[in-house]
Structure formats: structure tokens, C-alpha cells
Amino acid sequence: MDYRQQFEDDFRELFTKRLREDEEFGTELWSALANVDWCQESDEDNSEVGYSFRSAGSLIASMLCHGNYMDWYCSGPDGVVSELISEKMASKGWRYKIL
Image 1 (tube, rainbow, N blue to C red):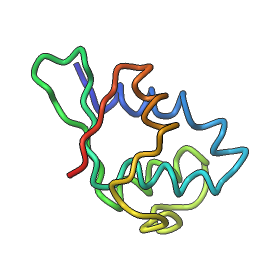
Image 2 (spheres, rainbow, N blue to C red; image 1 turned 90 degrees about the vertical axis):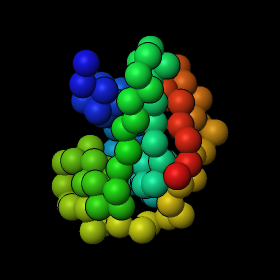
Image 3 (tube, rainbow, N blue to C red; image 1 turned 180 degrees about the horizontal axis):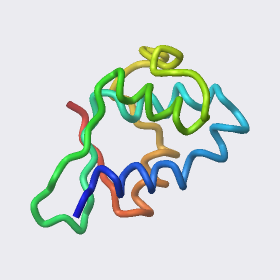
């Protein structure tokens, strides 16, 4: 199974609407992606999905359908997962660990 694609699908489903309503939310999303590894509870091999500073910014820009990674690069502290993001991702079976 491609856990990276599943992660991105779940992340987009959970957060795209709010991001488009409030672009400042992108900073919180960036912080939850950069230097954080996410694991799917159903994955017995504990495959990890992680994002560099650039790839985290690229994902957010693609969710907005405009801009690029530089719009989000270092927009917040890396490796910080808010309670909201943690809870929503847990509802899809994702847990995180800070690098």
C-alpha cells in the first residue's frame, strides 16, 4: 500500500476546506508536516511518511491551488503538531512522532 498517497489524501480531505477559508491555517499545517513522521496504525511495518521543509510547503500550496513551497517555507516552527491536527489525523488512523 502507498501510505504517502493515503496520508496526502487524508490530509487534503481533513484540512483543505479550512485552509481555503483561512490561509493563515497553512502555518499550522506546515508545522505539523515539517520534521514530523506520520505512521498509519494499520501498517504492521510502521512505514513513516515525512516531509522536508520544501515538500511540506509544496503540499500546502497544492491544496490552495496557487503559490509554491516558498510561500510556506519556515512559516512556523517545525515539528509542532497542534491538538486539532493531531485529533483529526488520529480519526484517520495516523499518529505522529517528532524527529
